[in-house]
Image 1 (cartoon, rainbow over the protein chains, first blue to last red):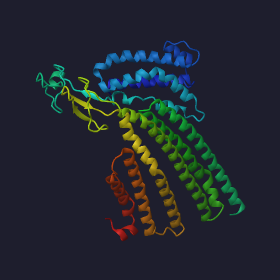
Image 2: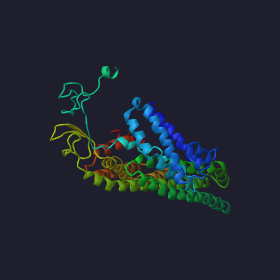
Image 3: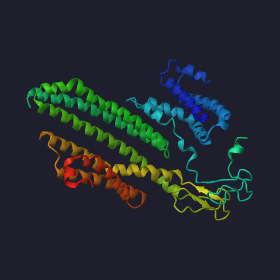
Image 4: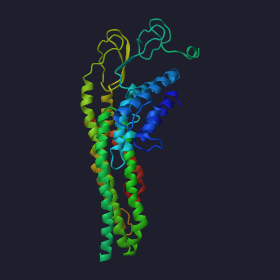
Length: 161
Length: 272
């Protein structure tokens, strides 16, 4: 599994743990769970949930720095997109999960857990640049730099160095 | 129908009415919840589809209660209260209800998805006004088709730019067009469901006589009409010609797996 995906899974379990504690579905009380994230709060107010979210994001961001070089850049971009919204999303997800009379709240809260797959998509344009001299690609499907004559992308030999 | 039978039918109707009430409640809450999710994630259909998958499961659980109650408590009573004909009354009521239940949820889902599709339209319009620029020098680029990816050579600096259409346009063309076309087809698809139920009951009343050729021809015409409606609506939304190949493909599948299995049809029309 890509290290960024493994980290994303950990992020999911933190999210579930916090939301369950906020809904009173965990063995530990909300106060204990919040304290474990360094937040002192007697009840799961939106502010407290956001503070817990920020604490989780801090930890995840530090962990991401450690694995970033080994992970797929697209998965990293996706995870970064999630982390940006993570803290603000927790109070919203809690409101959704606790506001249902029919028990549908969990469905709505889970539905938004993986929002943001579009993070790296939809960019209007991209230019491939030579890895040696930085010159832009001049001809489609030609990957030899027209300025320095070197390969535009890293070859197997160069990446294994 | 005697008094005992009437009482039994009333109790069964009462149970089904409670299920319908519950379905209405779920649909009301689902519609509001999905609208909120769509508003939160206007360009990302994944959360909305995740929610609908979860709701599908909840609806299925509710629907299963009909079968469980019928099997466990009701069927025997209908069997004991009359001859085979009375059991059919109960079975027909159950089948009618289940079909209406499915259609009610399909209509609700179609409305949720069409509302989402409608919300994408202004975003796609706005995105279509954006001027793509060269990533190297900032000069304006002109895609040949705004909704397709392509390599564009910058007219100013010759850098090759990979143009990717804005997400709102991709989402509208990719998902919204399908949702709108599917919703347009839905009443026709549901009419086919009722028609097939009617045919089954006609056959049952005649000791499972083969379905007449005229009925099979009507079925095929209804299928063709449904798929044509889908393709026409999609073409209208996308501003493109109708995809006749799509209609032909769907009908070839229908012919192969429905009509070519039927001896009456094969005797009259062959498998061509």
